[in-house]
Length: 71
Image (cartoon, rainbow, N blue to C red; front, side, top):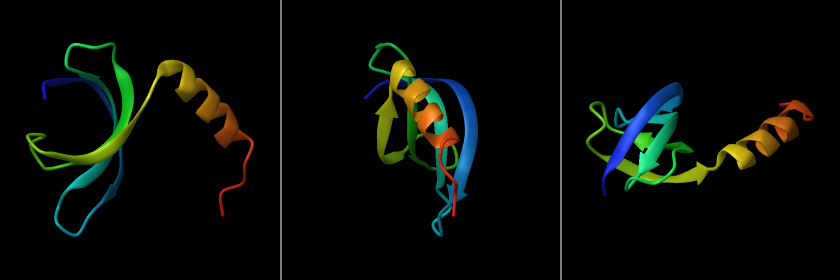
């Protein structure tokens, strides 16, 4: 599958195998860019399962997260 990472937003964690869970703004197969959380190898040539979130969904998620206390 073709993809373009438009913006690396940040790393969430590193796994024992050296892969990193990241939040990126990415386009899959020439589609509209989406926010994407998944694991990547060091040079971004391989990736694990993840989730994609549209800009509208990210706005809602950001609002929901601002209302909770992280424990």
